[in-house]
Amino acid sequence: MRLADGIRQHGFRKWYERELLQSHGHMVLLLFCTLGILGSLEAASSARTLADKVTDLLTTLLCAGAGLWSLRRYLYLLSHAEAVANQASCPACGTYARFKLLQASTDGRLVNVGCRQCEHHWDIES
Image (cartoon, rainbow, N blue to C red):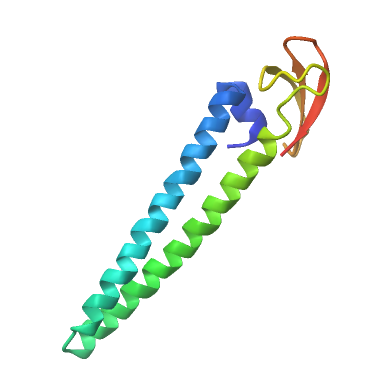
C-alpha cells in the first residue's frame, strides 16, 4: 500500500503497524521455506527412484526460490517502514506520529504532512 493511501485510510500508526505485520509475515514464510528445504533434502537422501529424487530436487528449488523472494520482501518492507518512521517526528516540537496528511506527490514518493500539535509542515519521503 502506498504511504499516502495508507495514512489517508488508516492513519500513520496503523499504516506502520500493518507494514511491520506484513514484513514479519514474510519472515514466517521464510521460516517455513527453510523447513521445506530441510525436509526435501532429508527425503532426497532416502529416495530410491529417479522420479523421487527429481521431485525432491524440484521441491528444494521451489522452497529456495520462495524463501529468497520472502527474504527480499521482508527486508524491503521492514527497511521502508523504518525509514518512514524515522521521518515521522515533527522537526519543530518533536511530537511523534501525530500529523495529518496535507498533500501527496503524483508518484506517491513525497508526502507533505502537518503536525497536529504545532501546525508545522514537513515532507516525508517514502
